[in-house]
Image (cartoon, rainbow, N blue to C red):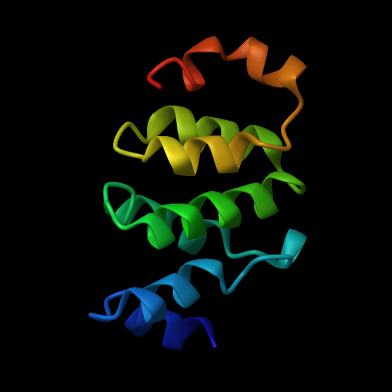
Amino acid sequence: MLDVMDDWIKDDSIWVRRVAIICQNKRKTKTDVKRLFQYCKEHASDGEFFIAKAIGWSLRSYAYTDPSAVRRFVEETNELQNLSKREALKNISKKEIKKEPKLLSEE
């Protein structure tokens, strides 16, 4: 299935690209993290609301499994839309976010 998503992430339709981004939601430890972060990074600067929301949603979903990896990704991906950042960090405890105050400082 994930091989198909490699084609879908390049599709002209935002809805098909969105499915590719969110396809791993709730996979927890079975998430292909490299692919997830690659897809999110490839579309981080996409101005389309539904793509930015999907990126945030996917990162938030994976943050339940590895919050520090998501925190690092958000910090290192400067082109990430603010909406994606907010959604990604939504369920990471405020205590953890305070350790990294620059994560939301660009808003």
